[in-house]
Image (tube, rainbow, N blue to C red):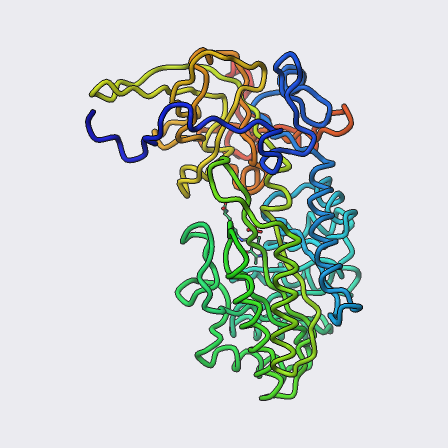
Length: 483
Ligand code: LLP
């Protein structure tokens, strides 16, 4: 045998089989199950019915699962930071960038979460969905005036509760806009704690050499705090840290929590300002393939950071602040799957007797850019049937004009997978739809919510007309040209 190609997973065939819902319930919506006829069902609806009655490709959201995950986060934070334990309250804000729709916003807020946003689009959608501005945050390292204005005018000038200041530049910008509007902006300062964490360099956001936050140890934080303190239009509510995304384990969260408490104490000693709030960001990881590390549960994370905050505050003789977190991926990731229909299947001859099966589906990198962008790994299984024929190492690819258009790099699928079969990819709820594009002028798939045997679009699929409407030149050309 020759050298395996770089991305070839050399494990024996059969080692990369997607776990069934009953084997790895954490990787599937809670209602997912394989029916006796071999068809996968989610929310009481079979995926074959969804494919035939709605469309492929599609994202499928288990609403009850999403509500459950949101509830676990909200409850874990409320419980671990309960006043009765000597704490000062805890909250969880859903990081809307993972996936937003008004229905999702309703589900997570009904479950007790607030919502964090990072752009005018996200903020507008969340406010228009009816979320109480007191339960909304605004992030961004380069906020536009229009974003800040919208945040400050929300709820008829009550403004949203948390605007996260990312630089000294932004202090001036916020002060100018708050003054113009005649309001006081409640702000938190995003700090670089120096903690390095996260699934890869693109999503590691706490260390010095990246664009988010102000330096904690080079005088920048002091400068920002002093300039907020000297403004009549800004009120310092707290400190914020988001160290990264797809983090497994609790050590990095504990380290960041401890550092943030120390920084809060230093600010108090230096300026006399109290720091009533700290936010420890998102980042809890999820399992994508079944052979990756087992993620830490929200309860373990909440308990660990509560312990770290309690210990640090006791040691520093500092009043325990209110604590919030901003999970995205761990709330919506496993609540959704992607459903595709198989088209072309072919084998590539790699030499030295090696072959790789390429299974093409009707979506691709435009509805899931993560494998191409980060080398992210997923797994897949047949949704419309089971098969006991020998598995073959397969690569699931899309229909875009790029060889990097891969959805699943390596998975062992039955060798009889053929055109017309349905494939389901678990754990695509976070950063799938929200990072989707229209590359090759493919329309974005819709999102079907399933619950108690009912299914409905919560985001309808885009149409070609949706795309063409943007083209100012096309409007004047007769549709007769289409024929
Ligand atoms: N808070 C802040 C300030 C954030 O920047 C993020 C994510 C979160 C919370 C939520 O983090 P989560 O719990 O979802 O890990 N597109 C990448 C992930 C980018 C994360 C950006 N910030 C991916 O697909 O892996």
